[in-house]
Image (tube, rainbow over all chains, first blue to last red; front, side):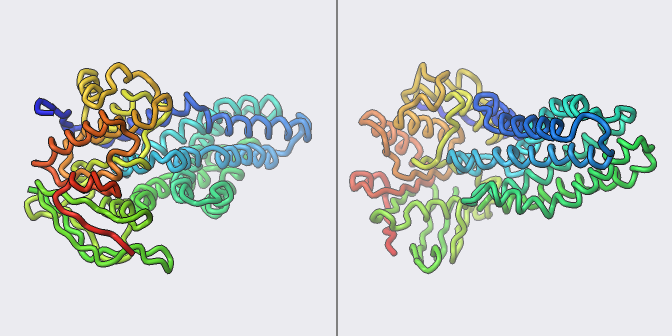
Amino acid sequence: MKKRSIVLLSNNAGLIAKSFAVYAKDLRLEIRTRSALNAILMFGITTLAVVSFSLGQSGLAPKLLSALFWIIMFFSAMSGLAQTFIREEETGTSLALKLTADPDAVYLGKFFFNLTLLSTMAIIITPLFFVFTDAPTGNMILFFLVLILGVLALCSATTIVAAIIAKASVKGALFAVLSFPILMTLLMTLVSAGEKIFDSQSFLEISSEIQFLVAYVVIMITASILLFKFVWQE
Amino acid sequence: MYRIEADNLGKRFGERVVFSKINFTLATGQSLAVIGRNGSGKSTLLKIMLSLLTPSKGKVTYYQENQKLDDAKIRSAVSFVSPYLNLYDHLTAEENLKFFATVSGGNITGKDINQLLEKVGLEGRGMDYVFEYSSGMKQRLKYAVAMLKDPKFLFLDEPTSNLDDDGKRLVVELLEYYRKNSIIIIATNEKEEYSLAEQQCRVDS
């Protein structure tokens, strides 16, 4: 091995490039195995179909419509978003990742991967929801604003909880139990905002909910980045 | 010049003491074989040295020219090969190398990848998924990933595990290559591997 020339790394990739590498790796693995997306979509579509056939198509109250929509989003998130960390632990790849990757890059990569999954789910489920439930479509700009903030908030909370539960033996149950107190206020706010939107109220009347959602996302992401290193290392 | 210090390390799981009072200091150019019977805590000691586990007692400190290294610098200076450290089965060997190069903070060209794969005896198999590899080929690929960094601290747990005679020769050559400019720590219970390191540390509860 006298002439062995080892590849020297230039150490010039920044946090964005490293985070993107984690994100792209997870996306590639998901496209090849479809373990999380299938779970999320199956849950979302099945729930939506069962609910719409049970309750009928029209005349549902705004509060009920909003609750149904966010329950579907919440349980879909619960069924799939923990996979990104659980898969690393179960396949034994987390050691290699811990030894090479900056924890911030891992968190951001996983967060954006979860965001992609839940956004895909929302893109598929939202039109189906309006078709199946005949929900009012008069306030769609506000609906999409709340939907974007809601998806961001769900991902910010579930990503850090998924990292915490990944090493536990009863992951599924623990994920829901740990997520519940963190997501309780979020869900109540989302349902309240949705109710007002389906009731054709104006932006001013849901501004407090929007402020809460923005604050929730900022606080959760900041706290997660600060805490993730400790969660990830052991 | 790099240095690593294990200061009074101890680990217990519940009531069971795995090991205690482990002390050693190694500098660049030195190597250590951690030996002991099955279940004596060799792999646990390596995981503690790599900050993958927290010790119940004591601490591990990395230095470069008497300056303590922070986590980021340790990550960029450490490579680890072990049977329980897995690569991504649903990525190809090339994709694994590219991924670990990027998250380690660098870039790697197709030519570099081919060179690395050739060095570990995997030439022509870079486009294969890792799940198609045998356990020996996976072990060789782990060495390729370890070589991405030019490690200043090289940790090997059961270094010749799953390898054929050619693979074992590769490990010996690799250790000779890194011996001068790295600190090498090997955990093993194979007597023929004891000689791969200059010093020994016996771990027994």
